[in-house]
Length: 262
Image (cartoon, rainbow, N blue to C red; front, side):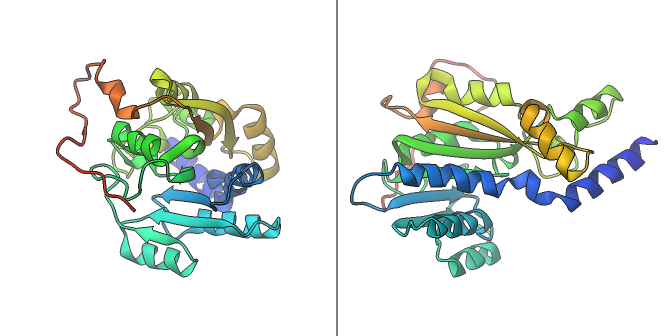
């Protein structure tokens, strides 16, 4: 089969089972587990940066209410006004901020859960972003991340034939390629986060049932990756990992900025 026809077939498979790429059911389950162990008088506070139209938080809210949990608050960061408006209609408190160059507009240790689903691959300044996550997340709080998988089965086949992986097309929106081992190593650098679980979503080009089985058995080769990690009690911010390392890329460090407080 010609390579262009193969890519068209992959896109068709993706469109038919797009929910498997986002695994909002998994994100909701992880948040539910956090809610069940949540203690104290304050509500469970959940942030989705790059929240879009609020689909992830909307499903999370429905799942929490279904299990009798009412004491929670939903927050989102979204710069695209039409999407932010849709999120607000779902009861989400939305702020507009550039997550790559501005402080998240919340105080230190404000959140119990911070999530992003199919957002990180669009960003360059991941050191700054996860530094802000390390700041606004409570010790022991969860950071849940969903990303396309550079090492997916279909991307490996494309590379075998000398073609660009679909998760990081040059003529496309993604600027980062992420694999399970690399993201685990990134998050756990210097001990600010501890990765607890990595799951898969979808498995091109197989039909839905088989794709679900394969992504469960071989998450490292699935089309999407979902990483559950926990903020450790280590003091300081994740951005400090840049102090002991030299990269030829001038990453944004936030010098001269001030932290806005909620």
